Image 1: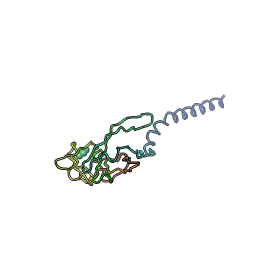
Image 2: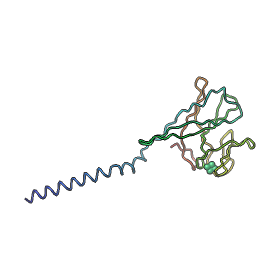
Image 3: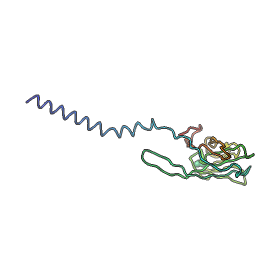
Image 4: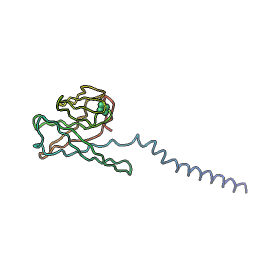
Length: 167
Ligand code: FES
């Protein structure tokens, strides 16, 4: 009789431990997985025929990006700015201000990129910060020309820090 009681106590303790472990797995996964999350890969974005871009004039190009997080897929409208002086060498910047990620624009009068959120200012040719709170220059993207078509490798970078760190 004593053995049977002991066995039942042991069996219920083991059962409770298994249930607790199973219930804890999702919580543990949510806690640990960010440390192992892969950085988002570069995505080559087609910007257009190189012969279509005017020299000396920055151009904003919009595109739709798809982000996946577990089972959720989200579409986000993004943009980049491109600039060329000779039609052969292109500079492409991420369209997100390096301060807090607002979209910035080009001010024809001053010849600078300006961010409306906190008055950040950037140099057209180098992306250097000329004013305001942005902690680093605009994020330059890798570019390639394939069969006369210009592509930029888009990726996200951490905002609000002096170093360019891909996320
Ligand atoms: S987000 Fe651009 S200056 Fe703050």
